[in-house]
Amino acid sequence: MKRRSFNNLVAKGTIMTSIVQRDLMTNELLNDKKKNAALKRGSKIGLVTPAGKINADRLVKTKVNLDALGLESYHTDNVLLQDGYMAGSDSIRKQELHDMYADSSIDGIWCIRGGYGATRLLDDLDFDLIKKNKKPLIGYSDITALLNTIHQKTGSPCFHGPVASSTMTDYTIQNLAPLFGLSDDHIIQLSDENISRGQEEDVFKCKTITSGIARGELVGGNLSLLVSLLGTDHEVKTKNKIVFIEDIGEAPYRIDRMLTQLISTGFFDKVKGIVLGVFAGCERKDDKTQTLHEVVVERVKRLNIPAIYGFSFGHIDNQCTFPIGAKAEIDTGKALITLLEDGY
Image 1 (cartoon, rainbow, N blue to C red):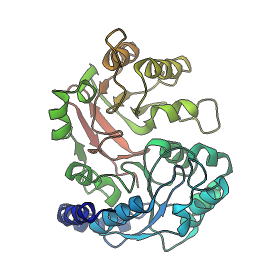
Image 2 (cartoon, one colour):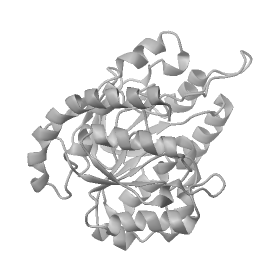
Image 3 (cartoon, rainbow, N blue to C red):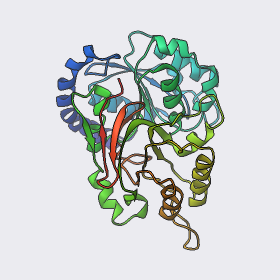
C-alpha cells in the first residue's frame, strides 16, 4: 500500500474513533440485558473471506478500519488464499467461518469483502454449531446469502452493512450504531453526499415509488443473491417483512428480469414495504432503452405497497447498516427508516 494512502487511512481513523466512541460508551451498559452481546470497544473481531479473494493491501485497510473503531482484529493466513476468483476452496472458507463461531474469544465476525462464493457454502454449514455460538456477522453483497440464511436458521444476529475493507465515511460510521446496541430508536436518513450526487446522477436520485408508512422485520440484500436463493432451502422468507434490495453493474433489462422473477414467485406478495438502495453502475448505456428508474418504478409500483428507490446503501461509500430480522419502520414519503430494534 502506498505511504500516502496508508497515512490517509490513519488520519481518517482518528476521526472515526472520535465519532464512534460516544455511542459505544452509551451502549456498553446495555449488553448485559440483551439476548446476545452487542459489540463494544475492545471486542475481538474475526475477519473472514467466505467469498471473493483479497490482496494484502485490502487486509491492511481492513485492520486500520477496525483499529479506528476501537475493535481488535483477528484472522488466519487463510484470508489471503486464492482459488480462482474465490478466497480458497469451499472447504477452507467454510471451516474458517465455523472456527470463528466456535472460538469463544471471538465476539463478532466481519467479512472483508463480498465477491462470489458464499452460496456454495450454505448446504454444508453447521447451523447447530452457529446456533450454540451466536455472534454478529457483518457484510453485504454476496454475503447476503449468509446473512439471511444464518439468521433464518439460527437466530444469530446478522447485519447488512459495510464489509470490513469498505471506505468508512462519517455517515457509514454513524449508522453502524446497531452493531454496538441501541439505547433508543435509531433514525436513518439519506446521506448528504448522496442527496447532492442525486442532483447530477440519476442512479443516486432518491425517488418515492409509493408513499406510505410500514412496519416489519428487515430482510434482504443484493438482488442477484435474493433471486439465486429462490427455490432452495435457503430462500428468504418475506411474509410481513420490509425488504431492502440493492445491486451493482446490471443493465436495466437485467434488473427488470430479476424483479419480474421475484414478482412471479410471490416473493413480494405479503411484504409490508420495499427499500431499494443505490443501484450503482446500473444505468442504461444508450437512450433507446428504459432507464433504471423507469424499470424500477414500473415493476415495483404495481405491488401497491410503500416503496422507495435510492436509499443510502449498496455498492457505494455511504452505507447504512440494517440488522436482519430487526423491527423497523419506513416512511417512504419522507425517506426515513427508523430502527426499532438493534438485531440482538
